[in-house]
Image 1 (spheres, rainbow, N blue to C red):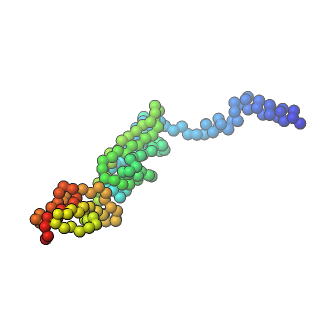
Image 2: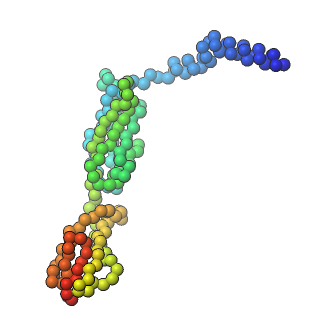
Image 3: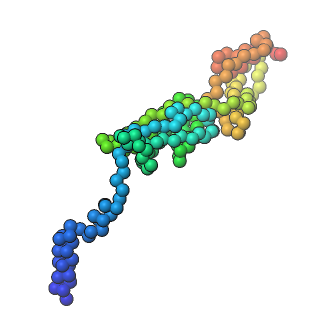
Length: 186
């Protein structure tokens, strides 16, 4: 019984060695289309400008050395996670600033990259709210204040730096910090 099993194994192993594999490996390699090597990448648009909260289209096309479009060039586009999301040819702005999205595809001698400038601006503020710290303002006391800004979609703008002024400096003074100092009753 053990001898028959061992002979079957030897016969199968010998047939495998003579054919150079199962044959299916070679057939699969012949059927796979040869993908042209990516020589360069082109972005459309070449520079993306959008507002935080908005989405813009970005198409990155891969070309071979002869200038032919490579249909599936395996292009991947990434950007700073805190600033933007990139998915399915769409960039969504998250944080205002100047950034770079990078497109990458494999070329014949390693990765081929393209840097795409991305400018994200803030949408217009639709509401500003001044919030005072708890307590009351009396002559000789100081109370802190902060400003909160909101956009039309209800999202808030972080990092607002207001310029503080007073209409009557005799009643209250606004130092450079967001604090009010009571001067006298008014």
